[in-house]
Image 1 (tube, helix red, strand yellow):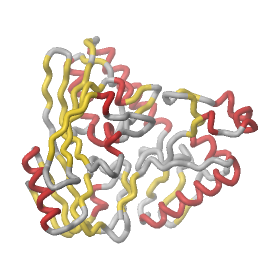
Image 2: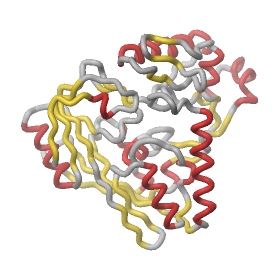
Image 3: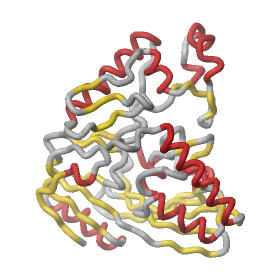
Length: 311
């Protein structure tokens, strides 16, 4: 277990913003995670679990507690069942699957961050989601006097649209690893499909700038009033249910390219906010509020953030 003090959180954020953390603890196994939990409790400090930092917005004032980075990197293959640690980068997991000829997660090509974060938010794209291939998830419960290890089958993880039981603040659990049900496939075909998704993201997303992916969830088509359902009927996509991409609503509001300090609403994809090089958390937060207000005013829709704010 490695304990770091007074470290800039901008180092751990894909936005490249954020003040300093009082402590950052890197834990490589279950025992070290348990030690880190005890460390925070003994000092009565808040605990935040950090994965890849790809959808996090850290406050300019930093975090006065303990930031725990579970770096569980195990990979175990038994037949067609894979057990993978939550600290694995999605890119590394997909490379492993390609080499083993295992199919099922090709849609995640180019997905940033760690496996744990993808499970927590039930990440999805191209009509598929993490839950589609997960058999079970192991976690550590941390909200009582004892440290409890829990294993849940997929149907008990309460997966929903960019959601899971692990997002429930009352649960307070750390994802350790997951088992996947996959199928055998042709290695070259798997690789080709993954590269197609990676190239799609590079072409349509502003990957040349620091960003945290989509700021907001897409909007359920049925939540729009009838007037706007008619307007956007031809622009609906499955994600995995009928949605209108939030980027379309933001574009219709004329928000592409809007700046606040060193941050900007991407001209390539307006559901992305990019750091032009000198952005602060406040700059980004100001743009988020403008985006919410404009869409609410024009379409009567309350946008729901995908990013996680840490103060």
